[in-house]
Image 1 (tube, rainbow, N blue to C red):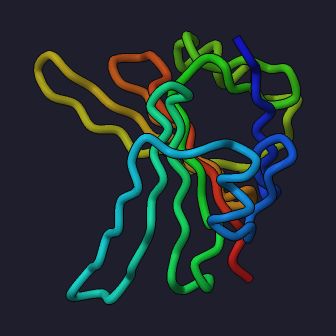
Image 2: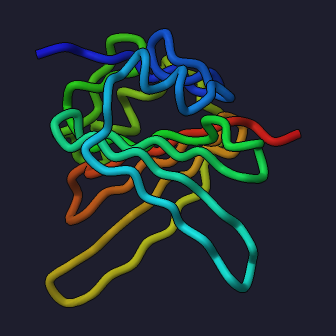
Length: 146
């Protein structure tokens, strides 16, 4: 299995944020699905390339001239500087990320009878981590808007 380095603020491995769709496809390959999302109310339009085998989605937003704006992954093939976070519970996660210096985070917690979810968002690095029932499910990161 190939392993991919998440680079907060920058991209994924050699892929950089603000790459074009064609540049992204030339580095990652043809997507399994190419989805266009057109929001009628907010007029926020996105093109999302989905790679099922990689468990990766890449978003190209109109507001950024259809260039790579964010990436979402949900596989243990992804790490940050050789720190693997999938299959961690929230306590282990918070310990493991300390050396990454991601900054302070905001958390959002949702609880139901048999289900809970927690999101940790690190604004300084525009990266979010989604937990469901105390297991990391998804990481999403993107460009920093100034």
